[in-house]
Length: 480
Image 1 (tube, rainbow, N blue to C red):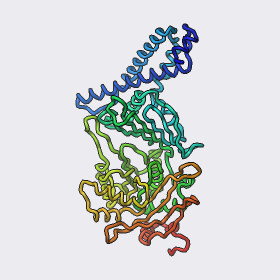
Image 2: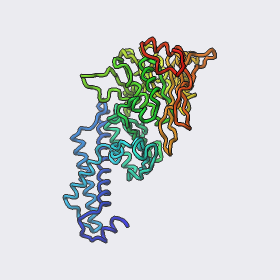
Image 3: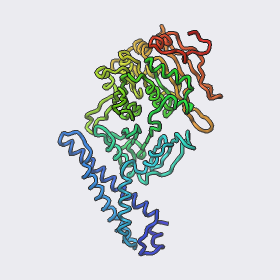
Image 4: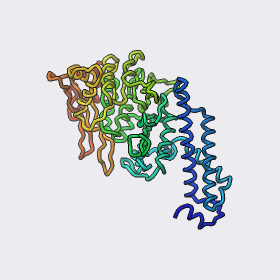
Protein backbone atom coordinates (compact mmCIF):
# COMPACT_ATOMS: atom_id res chain seq x y z
CA UNK A 1 0.00 0.00 0.00
CA UNK A 2 1.36 3.42 -0.94
CA UNK A 3 1.49 6.35 1.45
CA UNK A 4 -1.30 8.11 -0.48
CA UNK A 5 -3.58 5.04 -0.26
CA UNK A 6 -2.90 4.60 3.46
CA UNK A 7 -3.54 8.25 4.25
CA UNK A 8 -6.87 8.24 2.36
CA UNK A 9 -8.01 5.23 4.41
CA UNK A 10 -7.15 7.13 7.57
CA UNK A 11 -9.29 10.12 6.55
CA UNK A 12 -8.95 12.90 4.05
CA UNK A 13 -8.60 15.61 6.67
CA UNK A 14 -5.95 13.90 8.79
CA UNK A 15 -3.21 16.35 9.84
CA UNK A 16 -1.08 13.91 11.87
CA UNK A 17 1.56 12.01 9.88
CA UNK A 18 2.88 8.49 10.19
CA UNK A 19 6.51 7.65 10.98
CA UNK A 20 7.02 6.49 7.37
CA UNK A 21 5.70 9.80 6.07
CA UNK A 22 7.95 11.74 8.40
CA UNK A 23 11.00 9.78 7.20
CA UNK A 24 9.99 10.37 3.59
CA UNK A 25 9.53 14.11 4.06
CA UNK A 26 12.80 14.47 5.97
CA UNK A 27 14.65 12.60 3.21
CA UNK A 28 13.10 14.80 0.50
CA UNK A 29 14.02 18.03 2.26
CA UNK A 30 17.49 16.79 3.15
CA UNK A 31 18.12 15.86 -0.49
CA UNK A 32 17.00 19.30 -1.62
CA UNK A 33 19.23 20.98 0.97
CA UNK A 34 22.27 18.91 0.01
CA UNK A 35 21.77 19.66 -3.69
CA UNK A 36 21.37 23.38 -3.00
CA UNK A 37 24.55 23.47 -0.92
CA UNK A 38 26.47 21.57 -3.59
CA UNK A 39 25.25 23.98 -6.28
CA UNK A 40 26.31 26.95 -4.15
CA UNK A 41 29.77 25.45 -3.67
CA UNK A 42 30.17 24.92 -7.41
CA UNK A 43 29.11 28.48 -8.16
CA UNK A 44 31.50 29.80 -5.54
CA UNK A 45 34.38 27.78 -6.98
CA UNK A 46 33.60 28.90 -10.54
CA UNK A 47 33.47 32.55 -9.50
CA UNK A 48 36.82 32.23 -7.70
CA UNK A 49 38.32 30.60 -10.79
CA UNK A 50 37.11 33.42 -13.03
CA UNK A 51 38.78 35.90 -10.68
CA UNK A 52 41.99 33.87 -10.69
CA UNK A 53 41.67 33.06 -6.99
CA UNK A 54 42.09 29.78 -5.11
CA UNK A 55 38.84 27.87 -4.49
CA UNK A 56 37.24 28.50 -1.10
CA UNK A 57 34.21 27.32 0.82
CA UNK A 58 30.99 29.36 0.51
CA UNK A 59 30.30 32.02 3.10
CA UNK A 60 28.57 30.33 6.10
CA UNK A 61 25.72 32.85 6.00
CA UNK A 62 25.13 32.23 2.28
CA UNK A 63 25.26 28.48 2.96
CA UNK A 64 22.67 28.73 5.73
CA UNK A 65 20.38 30.92 3.58
CA UNK A 66 20.67 28.51 0.65
CA UNK A 67 19.80 25.57 2.91
CA UNK A 68 16.83 27.40 4.41
CA UNK A 69 15.44 28.45 1.03
CA UNK A 70 15.76 24.90 -0.34
CA UNK A 71 13.94 23.51 2.70
CA UNK A 72 11.08 26.01 2.34
CA UNK A 73 10.65 25.25 -1.38
CA UNK A 74 10.57 21.50 -0.76
CA UNK A 75 8.08 21.92 2.08
CA UNK A 76 5.87 23.87 -0.34
CA UNK A 77 6.12 20.97 -2.81
CA UNK A 78 5.15 18.52 -0.06
CA UNK A 79 2.14 20.66 0.88
CA UNK A 80 0.97 20.83 -2.76
CA UNK A 81 1.30 17.04 -3.04
CA UNK A 82 -0.78 16.54 0.10
CA UNK A 83 -3.50 18.90 -1.12
CA UNK A 84 -3.68 17.13 -4.51
CA UNK A 85 -4.07 13.87 -2.57
CA UNK A 86 -6.98 15.24 -0.55
CA UNK A 87 -4.95 15.65 2.63
CA UNK A 88 -4.72 18.62 4.97
CA UNK A 89 -1.46 20.59 5.01
CA UNK A 90 1.05 19.80 7.70
CA UNK A 91 0.73 21.74 10.90
CA UNK A 92 3.24 24.52 11.47
CA UNK A 93 4.80 22.54 14.33
CA UNK A 94 5.24 19.47 12.09
CA UNK A 95 6.77 21.58 9.32
CA UNK A 96 9.27 23.18 11.68
CA UNK A 97 10.22 19.83 13.24
CA UNK A 98 10.68 18.12 9.87
CA UNK A 99 12.66 21.05 8.43
CA UNK A 100 14.92 21.17 11.49
CA UNK A 101 15.57 17.41 11.37
CA UNK A 102 16.33 17.52 7.64
CA UNK A 103 18.76 20.45 7.89
CA UNK A 104 20.52 18.93 10.92
CA UNK A 105 20.86 15.59 9.13
CA UNK A 106 22.56 17.38 6.24
CA UNK A 107 25.33 18.42 8.62
CA UNK A 108 28.18 16.04 9.40
CA UNK A 109 27.99 12.65 7.72
CA UNK A 110 24.22 12.35 7.44
CA UNK A 111 23.09 8.69 7.47
CA UNK A 112 26.72 7.62 7.92
CA UNK A 113 27.05 9.52 11.20
CA UNK A 114 25.77 6.67 13.43
CA UNK A 115 28.39 4.34 11.95
CA UNK A 116 31.09 6.99 12.32
CA UNK A 117 30.14 7.40 16.01
CA UNK A 118 30.12 3.64 16.72
CA UNK A 119 33.48 2.60 18.20
CA UNK A 120 32.90 -1.01 17.10
CA UNK A 121 32.76 -0.05 13.39
CA UNK A 122 36.01 -0.29 11.46
CA UNK A 123 34.75 0.57 7.98
CA UNK A 124 31.48 1.05 6.13
CA UNK A 125 31.23 0.87 2.35
CA UNK A 126 28.25 2.04 0.31
CA UNK A 127 27.65 0.25 -2.97
CA UNK A 128 25.45 1.22 -5.92
CA UNK A 129 21.84 1.55 -4.83
CA UNK A 130 22.83 2.87 -1.41
CA UNK A 131 23.42 -0.59 0.10
CA UNK A 132 25.85 -0.57 3.02
CA UNK A 133 28.36 -3.17 4.24
CA UNK A 134 30.08 -2.84 7.61
CA UNK A 135 33.37 -4.36 8.77
CA UNK A 136 33.33 -4.69 12.56
CA UNK A 137 36.51 -4.18 14.57
CA UNK A 138 35.01 -4.56 18.05
CA UNK A 139 32.00 -5.80 19.97
CA UNK A 140 30.19 -9.11 19.43
CA UNK A 141 30.61 -8.88 15.64
CA UNK A 142 34.38 -8.17 15.74
CA UNK A 143 36.23 -9.62 12.76
CA UNK A 144 33.07 -10.02 10.64
CA UNK A 145 31.30 -8.18 7.82
CA UNK A 146 27.54 -7.57 7.72
CA UNK A 147 25.08 -5.97 5.33
CA UNK A 148 23.18 -3.09 6.96
CA UNK A 149 20.67 -2.62 4.15
CA UNK A 150 19.86 0.55 2.24
CA UNK A 151 21.61 3.49 3.87
CA UNK A 152 20.84 6.01 1.08
CA UNK A 153 17.45 6.09 -0.62
CA UNK A 154 18.73 7.36 -3.98
CA UNK A 155 22.02 7.70 -5.84
CA UNK A 156 21.50 11.45 -5.78
CA UNK A 157 21.54 11.35 -1.97
CA UNK A 158 24.82 9.40 -2.01
CA UNK A 159 26.44 11.84 -4.41
CA UNK A 160 25.14 14.90 -2.53
CA UNK A 161 26.58 13.63 0.76
CA UNK A 162 29.91 12.84 -0.90
CA UNK A 163 30.12 16.29 -2.50
CA UNK A 164 29.42 17.99 0.81
CA UNK A 165 31.94 15.93 2.82
CA UNK A 166 34.63 16.58 0.20
CA UNK A 167 33.78 20.28 0.07
CA UNK A 168 33.97 20.59 3.88
CA UNK A 169 37.09 18.47 4.41
CA UNK A 170 39.07 18.48 1.17
CA UNK A 171 42.18 20.48 0.39
CA UNK A 172 43.18 22.48 -2.66
CA UNK A 173 39.65 22.83 -4.00
CA UNK A 174 38.92 19.10 -4.34
CA UNK A 175 35.66 18.28 -6.12
CA UNK A 176 33.82 15.09 -7.05
CA UNK A 177 32.98 15.45 -10.73
CA UNK A 178 33.58 13.94 -14.16
CA UNK A 179 37.15 15.25 -14.16
CA UNK A 180 37.97 13.84 -10.70
CA UNK A 181 35.58 10.91 -10.17
CA UNK A 182 37.69 9.39 -7.37
CA UNK A 183 38.40 11.55 -4.31
CA UNK A 184 39.90 10.71 -0.92
CA UNK A 185 39.84 13.14 2.02
CA UNK A 186 40.73 12.98 5.69
CA UNK A 187 38.19 13.64 8.43
CA UNK A 188 38.97 15.05 11.89
CA UNK A 189 40.45 12.36 14.13
CA UNK A 190 42.35 10.54 11.39
CA UNK A 191 39.33 8.93 9.71
CA UNK A 192 39.31 8.47 5.91
CA UNK A 193 36.50 9.17 3.44
CA UNK A 194 36.65 7.93 -0.16
CA UNK A 195 34.01 8.73 -2.78
CA UNK A 196 33.61 7.43 -6.32
CA UNK A 197 31.33 9.09 -8.84
CA UNK A 198 29.08 6.71 -10.74
CA UNK A 199 25.63 6.05 -12.06
CA UNK A 200 23.76 6.70 -15.28
CA UNK A 201 24.41 10.09 -16.82
CA UNK A 202 27.04 11.16 -14.28
CA UNK A 203 30.15 10.43 -16.39
CA UNK A 204 31.70 8.54 -13.52
CA UNK A 205 33.68 5.32 -13.29
CA UNK A 206 31.20 2.99 -11.55
CA UNK A 207 27.71 1.62 -12.11
CA UNK A 208 26.62 3.68 -9.13
CA UNK A 209 28.14 6.13 -6.63
CA UNK A 210 30.38 4.49 -4.02
CA UNK A 211 31.57 5.52 -0.56
CA UNK A 212 34.12 4.09 1.84
CA UNK A 213 34.37 5.48 5.38
CA UNK A 214 37.34 4.02 7.26
CA UNK A 215 37.36 4.81 10.97
CA UNK A 216 40.52 5.11 13.00
CA UNK A 217 39.52 2.99 15.98
CA UNK A 218 42.71 3.39 18.02
CA UNK A 219 43.49 7.07 18.43
CA UNK A 220 46.94 6.53 19.96
CA UNK A 221 47.92 2.86 19.54
CA UNK A 222 50.66 1.50 21.78
CA UNK A 223 52.69 -1.69 21.59
CA UNK A 224 51.30 -2.83 24.96
CA UNK A 225 47.79 -2.24 23.68
CA UNK A 226 48.45 -4.38 20.60
CA UNK A 227 49.93 -7.11 22.81
CA UNK A 228 46.67 -7.09 24.79
CA UNK A 229 44.82 -7.59 21.48
CA UNK A 230 47.01 -10.63 20.69
CA UNK A 231 48.49 -8.97 17.63
CA UNK A 232 52.03 -9.74 18.76
CA UNK A 233 53.75 -11.30 21.81
CA UNK A 234 55.24 -9.24 24.62
CA UNK A 235 58.87 -10.09 23.84
CA UNK A 236 58.47 -8.98 20.24
CA UNK A 237 56.98 -5.70 21.48
CA UNK A 238 60.11 -5.23 23.59
CA UNK A 239 62.27 -5.90 20.54
CA UNK A 240 60.22 -3.40 18.53
CA UNK A 241 60.82 -0.57 20.97
CA UNK A 242 64.56 -1.27 20.94
CA UNK A 243 64.60 -1.54 17.13
CA UNK A 244 62.89 1.84 16.76
CA UNK A 245 65.22 3.55 19.23
CA UNK A 246 68.23 1.96 17.55
CA UNK A 247 67.10 3.51 14.26
CA UNK A 248 66.40 0.34 12.28
CA UNK A 249 64.68 0.66 8.91
CA UNK A 250 61.43 -1.32 9.00
CA UNK A 251 58.75 -2.30 6.46
CA UNK A 252 55.28 -3.21 7.78
CA UNK A 253 53.62 -5.30 5.07
CA UNK A 254 50.38 -7.20 4.73
CA UNK A 255 47.00 -7.24 3.00
CA UNK A 256 44.42 -4.47 3.17
CA UNK A 257 43.00 -3.72 6.66
CA UNK A 258 45.47 -6.02 8.39
CA UNK A 259 46.65 -3.28 10.76
CA UNK A 260 49.91 -2.18 9.14
CA UNK A 261 49.47 1.54 9.84
CA UNK A 262 48.26 0.86 13.38
CA UNK A 263 51.34 -1.23 14.18
CA UNK A 264 53.68 1.29 12.57
CA UNK A 265 52.12 4.15 14.57
CA UNK A 266 52.47 2.14 17.80
CA UNK A 267 56.12 1.45 16.99
CA UNK A 268 56.80 5.15 16.36
CA UNK A 269 55.16 6.09 19.66
CA UNK A 270 57.98 4.08 21.30
CA UNK A 271 60.74 6.22 19.75
CA UNK A 272 63.15 8.39 21.76
CA UNK A 273 61.16 11.47 22.89
CA UNK A 274 64.03 13.70 21.76
CA UNK A 275 63.90 12.48 18.16
CA UNK A 276 62.71 14.93 15.50
CA UNK A 277 60.60 12.79 13.25
CA UNK A 278 58.53 13.50 10.15
CA UNK A 279 55.57 11.67 8.64
CA UNK A 280 54.67 11.84 4.94
CA UNK A 281 51.24 10.59 3.83
CA UNK A 282 49.06 10.63 0.75
CA UNK A 283 46.00 12.93 1.02
CA UNK A 284 44.95 11.67 4.46
CA UNK A 285 46.74 11.79 7.81
CA UNK A 286 46.40 8.39 9.49
CA UNK A 287 49.53 8.13 11.66
CA UNK A 288 48.67 11.26 13.71
CA UNK A 289 51.72 11.17 15.98
CA UNK A 290 50.86 14.64 17.26
CA UNK A 291 47.36 13.70 18.33
CA UNK A 292 46.50 14.98 21.82
CA UNK A 293 50.10 16.07 22.34
CA UNK A 294 50.21 19.70 21.23
CA UNK A 295 50.29 21.06 24.78
CA UNK A 296 53.28 23.23 25.62
CA UNK A 297 54.06 21.40 28.87
CA UNK A 298 55.18 18.23 27.07
CA UNK A 299 55.51 18.90 23.33
CA UNK A 300 56.61 16.37 20.71
CA UNK A 301 59.10 17.27 17.99
CA UNK A 302 57.02 15.95 15.09
CA UNK A 303 56.26 17.43 11.68
CA UNK A 304 53.44 15.98 9.59
CA UNK A 305 53.17 16.33 5.80
CA UNK A 306 50.49 15.17 3.39
CA UNK A 307 49.95 15.50 -0.34
CA UNK A 308 47.53 17.94 -1.89
CA UNK A 309 45.25 17.15 -4.81
CA UNK A 310 45.06 19.70 -7.60
CA UNK A 311 41.92 21.74 -8.16
CA UNK A 312 39.58 21.36 -11.11
CA UNK A 313 42.12 23.21 -13.27
CA UNK A 314 44.88 20.74 -12.24
CA UNK A 315 46.63 23.47 -10.29
CA UNK A 316 48.22 23.25 -6.86
CA UNK A 317 48.91 19.50 -6.70
CA UNK A 318 51.76 18.45 -4.38
CA UNK A 319 53.06 14.89 -4.74
CA UNK A 320 54.60 12.75 -2.04
CA UNK A 321 58.03 12.49 -3.65
CA UNK A 322 58.18 16.30 -3.80
CA UNK A 323 57.53 16.51 -0.07
CA UNK A 324 60.01 13.77 0.87
CA UNK A 325 62.74 15.32 -1.28
CA UNK A 326 62.55 18.45 0.89
CA UNK A 327 62.97 16.65 4.20
CA UNK A 328 66.55 17.90 4.70
CA UNK A 329 65.27 21.47 4.94
CA UNK A 330 63.29 20.39 8.02
CA UNK A 331 66.33 18.83 9.77
CA UNK A 332 64.52 15.56 10.40
CA UNK A 333 66.12 12.69 12.31
CA UNK A 334 63.78 10.18 10.64
CA UNK A 335 61.56 10.18 7.55
CA UNK A 336 58.47 7.95 7.82
CA UNK A 337 56.23 7.20 4.86
CA UNK A 338 52.60 6.28 5.52
CA UNK A 339 52.38 3.86 2.60
CA UNK A 340 54.50 2.94 -0.41
CA UNK A 341 52.30 2.82 -3.49
CA UNK A 342 54.37 4.50 -6.20
CA UNK A 343 57.93 4.29 -7.50
CA UNK A 344 58.91 7.91 -6.79
CA UNK A 345 57.74 7.55 -3.18
CA UNK A 346 59.78 4.41 -2.52
CA UNK A 347 63.06 5.63 -4.00
CA UNK A 348 62.83 9.07 -2.37
CA UNK A 349 62.12 7.46 1.00
CA UNK A 350 65.14 5.16 0.77
CA UNK A 351 67.32 8.05 -0.36
CA UNK A 352 66.15 10.17 2.57
CA UNK A 353 66.81 7.26 4.92
CA UNK A 354 70.50 7.15 3.98
CA UNK A 355 71.07 10.73 5.12
CA UNK A 356 68.92 10.75 8.29
CA UNK A 357 70.04 9.86 11.81
CA UNK A 358 67.55 6.98 11.92
CA UNK A 359 66.28 4.78 9.10
CA UNK A 360 62.73 5.03 7.83
CA UNK A 361 59.54 3.17 8.70
CA UNK A 362 56.80 2.59 6.13
CA UNK A 363 53.94 0.27 5.15
CA UNK A 364 53.46 -1.69 1.94
CA UNK A 365 50.64 -3.85 0.57
CA UNK A 366 51.56 -7.50 0.02
CA UNK A 367 49.94 -10.91 0.42
CA UNK A 368 53.09 -12.91 1.23
CA UNK A 369 56.13 -11.99 3.34
CA UNK A 370 58.59 -13.41 0.80
CA UNK A 371 57.61 -10.93 -1.93
CA UNK A 372 57.85 -7.70 0.08
CA UNK A 373 61.42 -6.80 -0.88
CA UNK A 374 60.79 -7.68 -4.54
CA UNK A 375 57.76 -5.40 -4.54
CA UNK A 376 59.75 -2.58 -2.97
CA UNK A 377 62.42 -3.04 -5.63
CA UNK A 378 59.74 -2.94 -8.34
CA UNK A 379 58.41 0.37 -7.01
CA UNK A 380 61.94 1.80 -6.91
CA UNK A 381 62.55 0.83 -10.54
CA UNK A 382 59.67 3.12 -11.59
CA UNK A 383 61.49 6.24 -10.35
CA UNK A 384 62.18 8.85 -13.02
CA UNK A 385 65.98 8.44 -12.60
CA UNK A 386 65.62 4.75 -13.59
CA UNK A 387 68.03 3.29 -11.00
CA UNK A 388 69.67 0.01 -11.98
CA UNK A 389 68.91 -3.29 -10.25
CA UNK A 390 72.33 -3.11 -8.60
CA UNK A 391 71.60 0.38 -7.24
CA UNK A 392 68.18 -0.64 -5.97
CA UNK A 393 69.50 -3.76 -4.24
CA UNK A 394 72.32 -1.76 -2.66
CA UNK A 395 69.93 0.93 -1.44
CA UNK A 396 67.51 -1.60 0.08
CA UNK A 397 70.37 -3.46 1.77
CA UNK A 398 71.63 -0.19 3.28
CA UNK A 399 68.30 1.10 4.57
CA UNK A 400 65.94 -1.79 5.40
CA UNK A 401 66.68 -3.96 8.42
CA UNK A 402 63.41 -5.71 9.30
CA UNK A 403 60.36 -6.75 7.28
CA UNK A 404 57.16 -7.31 9.24
CA UNK A 405 54.21 -9.22 7.88
CA UNK A 406 50.77 -8.73 9.43
CA UNK A 407 47.86 -10.90 8.33
CA UNK A 408 44.15 -11.45 8.96
CA UNK A 409 44.09 -14.93 10.48
CA UNK A 410 40.87 -17.02 10.72
CA UNK A 411 40.17 -17.67 14.41
CA UNK A 412 36.84 -18.97 15.69
CA UNK A 413 34.83 -17.82 12.68
CA UNK A 414 36.47 -14.40 12.67
CA UNK A 415 39.51 -12.86 11.01
CA UNK A 416 41.89 -11.45 13.60
CA UNK A 417 45.05 -9.38 13.13
CA UNK A 418 48.28 -11.22 13.80
CA UNK A 419 51.95 -10.58 13.11
CA UNK A 420 52.89 -13.78 11.25
CA UNK A 421 56.49 -13.17 10.18
CA UNK A 422 59.56 -11.06 10.92
CA UNK A 423 62.44 -11.21 8.46
CA UNK A 424 65.89 -9.73 8.99
CA UNK A 425 67.36 -8.13 5.88
CA UNK A 426 71.02 -8.65 5.11
CA UNK A 427 73.39 -7.22 2.55
CA UNK A 428 73.30 -7.49 -1.22
CA UNK A 429 74.45 -10.90 -2.46
CA UNK A 430 76.92 -11.36 -5.36
CA UNK A 431 74.06 -12.17 -7.74
CA UNK A 432 72.44 -8.81 -6.97
CA UNK A 433 69.62 -10.17 -4.79
CA UNK A 434 68.92 -9.13 -1.20
CA UNK A 435 69.61 -11.62 1.57
CA UNK A 436 66.87 -12.09 4.18
CA UNK A 437 66.04 -14.71 6.79
CA UNK A 438 62.91 -15.33 8.84
CA UNK A 439 63.46 -14.73 12.56
CA UNK A 440 59.89 -15.02 13.84
CA UNK A 441 57.29 -17.36 12.32
CA UNK A 442 53.64 -18.04 13.05
CA UNK A 443 52.11 -21.42 13.91
CA UNK A 444 48.52 -21.41 12.67
CA UNK A 445 47.49 -24.49 14.68
CA UNK A 446 48.52 -23.07 18.05
CA UNK A 447 47.99 -19.38 17.17
CA UNK A 448 51.48 -18.48 18.37
CA UNK A 449 54.32 -16.41 16.96
CA UNK A 450 57.70 -17.82 17.96
CA UNK A 451 61.29 -16.75 17.39
CA UNK A 452 62.75 -19.55 15.29
CA UNK A 453 66.15 -18.10 14.47
CA UNK A 454 68.77 -15.78 15.96
CA UNK A 455 69.37 -12.23 14.85
CA UNK A 456 72.63 -11.57 13.05
CA UNK A 457 75.67 -10.21 14.93
CA UNK A 458 75.71 -6.99 12.88
CA UNK A 459 72.19 -6.06 14.01
CA UNK A 460 72.99 -6.87 17.65
CA UNK A 461 76.18 -4.82 17.54
CA UNK A 462 74.28 -1.84 16.18
CA UNK A 463 71.95 -2.07 19.17
CA UNK A 464 74.90 -2.15 21.54
CA UNK A 465 76.45 0.77 19.70
CA UNK A 466 73.38 2.86 20.55
CA UNK A 467 73.82 2.02 24.24
CA UNK A 468 70.72 -0.21 24.26
CA UNK A 469 70.27 -3.71 25.71
CA UNK A 470 70.08 -6.75 23.40
CA UNK A 471 68.48 -8.87 26.16
CA UNK A 472 65.06 -9.15 24.50
CA UNK A 473 66.65 -10.12 21.15
CA UNK A 474 68.43 -13.20 22.50
CA UNK A 475 66.89 -16.65 22.39
CA UNK A 476 67.59 -18.91 25.37
CA UNK A 477 71.13 -20.25 24.94
CA UNK A 478 72.23 -17.53 22.53
CA UNK A 479 75.69 -16.06 23.10
CA UNK A 480 75.80 -12.45 24.19
